[in-house]
Length: 487
Image (cartoon, rainbow, N blue to C red; front, side, top):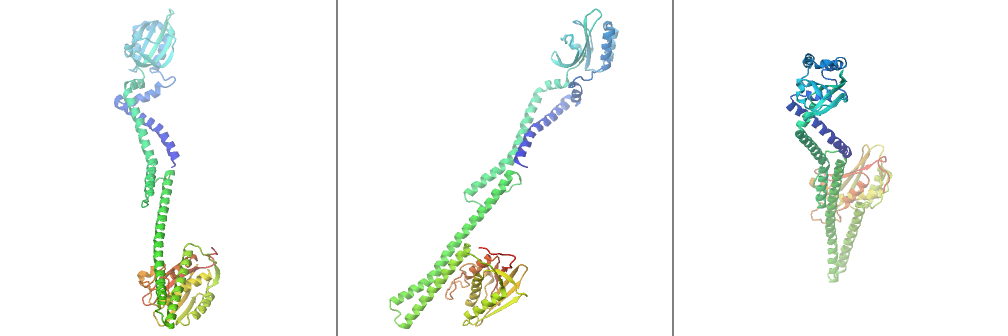
């Protein structure tokens, strides 16, 4: 429920609820102090009608008829005694007046014989007439006696019960009314404040925590109004801030790690180059053969540094999505056949055996960037060649077709990778050799580059190393329906 609707209903309830509670409170007072609730029903039936039914209606009609035809009977004791006998209600009395003289008053209204009754000419019903200190309901009929004197017949109901009750218990009624209004408003204000102030308090505490850099908390709300949605959105913002902070922290950690790795990998060849150059300057390379060996070492280390810098530059651009990809529809069998033919020429002196199996007929078509995929295949295969521990390095490529992807697996017969380190081989600067020996020429980011390129193709890459079966690297590529050219 919206806050606007809640406030509207709360305002309505602040009016309706006190009325209902006051009515029940008044009813309770009637039961406790009046004995029953008839006083209320009588009040609504007789006291607030424009012209209620007259108590002892037949008697009052008879008296009016007598006043018109035989008014002298009002002097006769036998007739007035008949009136007394016919009065059926103990709360109703009769007074007959001639001029200023009371000819008759029944026992029920003896206390009014000295009170001033309404003047002649006020014939009709009067719901409330104050006689003395008490209210009464009064019916009056005016007529003339035979001698011309004015006369009046009064049928008097002993006051108005509601007014009498209200007058008697005014202090209790007033205090009850005030208590009910105050209690109702307090309760409604409390519940409304919980609906409004609690979320605001939550947001205030959350904002204070965020300002102090504390993001490890959670905002919850059961409300679905505007404030509830605000709390939910605020918590989503907190989660994004936390994710951004964690990502920034991870980036900072990676930056420091990258700087340390770069420093290590660059310092080693630089130290070697410096040592050989100093050896030349100091005349240590005192023969032509020794000088040639020193210069070849310096050249090899310079090439290694150049290759490392190129790969770092490539990895950085891939990580920042700064390299464009141009995807083409490629027949995977023809593409791999051409690649392996060139690779065999490059590795003809390395004693490497290459194999290919396509488990699909016809060979599948994939979308890939041919140049970037060459880099992936080279990084994986040359990694296997560098770390091979057999006289004959065997590398086998297998292609399998799936529903919307193809899977390429590259298996070697090398030493493999311990299972606990498999998840690390795609991290930059990871090497299986804890000493980070670079004698093999590896930079440690070849597989990390492959990982970035495969992800850019919309696929995934992973590795497994069954015991005694070397290392297997798998990656997936999308079929033409799944991916298009993108930058």
